[in-house]
Length: 89
Image (cartoon, rainbow, N blue to C red; front, side, top):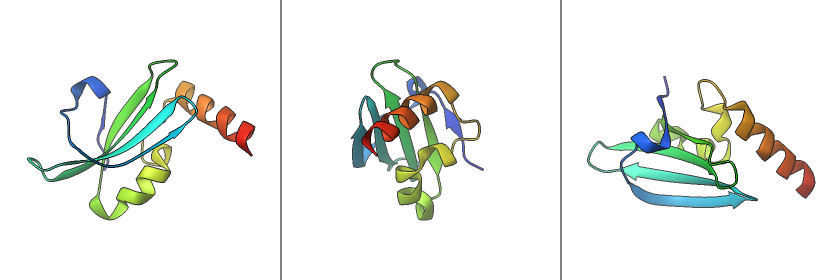
């Protein structure tokens, strides 16, 4: 099961990948001390976001589809991303 944490509960990790769509930034992080992989999502406009641990084999999929890995998708942030993607499509 994936663990959902708020961004304030997360120690810095080594950034493996980063992407931004509008105001939403998605980062793929590796925490060497705990040997764990995490996806971090943050919206700079609303300051909403979440961090979720993922299995190493799921890291890239989770990076490109982070909401599929959140146990309870944060609906307000999801609406922002959907609106931005609709505007770019």
